[in-house]
Length: 354
Image 1 (cartoon, one colour):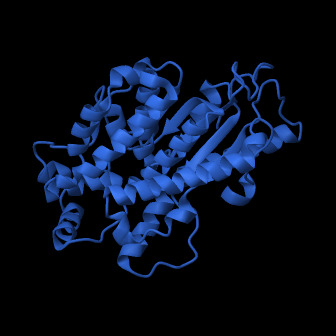
Image 2: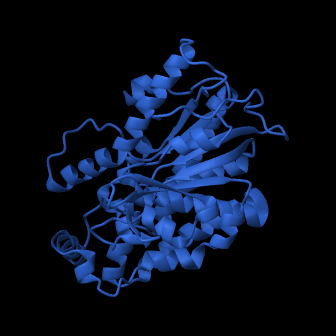
Image 3: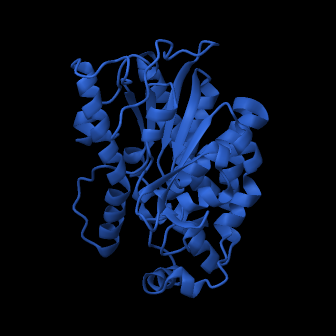
């Protein structure tokens, strides 16, 4: 947030034309825990009281966003719910892949788990000493194939009801890149999920891209500059805090990844809190600076119940269990906080992110 959001409008309120409250959604990436986000989206769609103006997402969050948009274009809320279920069902079905393919696939959907069979342990060790340019010279990519099969990007681009923002990291500049719905292809979403030890950088218009989580997980600033809605609901699936000090090599690596993929969100939230404080104190004019209201549906704590071994399990039972946790979390959040949308924050931004 290095520049001011565009001028606030007197018409900018939390109610749309048919009486639903408007929100923007910010969807974190986080591997198979993206099924928690599926559950959150499913509950919000089922509830029907929120109208989503925009979604910003990274990695699995970007995939959820694209699937949501396609389904919404096809059949509104019911279509979005059906598409999301079909997408995650297909992820579960990918268990039939060969081990080397599954290792690459689960690099996105299970990025922090290194438990499993000796085959996977060997593959994990191998990817730390060889680049994907060495061990995958044909650039085979089952995740890319899945995106082409499961998502119709013509429909995603045509869904004008919802603005989409997908984050990736420009390898050469180290800067964040934001791809809008009007431009989205499978390559853009693949770039957002491109872990560099497993996949070659995704080339888009001559520039190489890696996972968006390094610079925006998710990126919030497009919501402030490109939408009229002041309410941002963060669907957070990566824990900010852990009470235990990690001691094993696996736990240390897991925690490093959690901290790394939360760092960009922490930076943006500090900037949000700073602007909020200046607006609240009257030091910034409300006719030029939007007062953002921040909300969070937090999956980090309930998802801690899943062991590392169970995170490796992408069976339908495990994914639907995560979905059900997401549904329950969204329903609780709606029951407690619906009346606050458009009125106030429902988390203490300073306490949580400073």
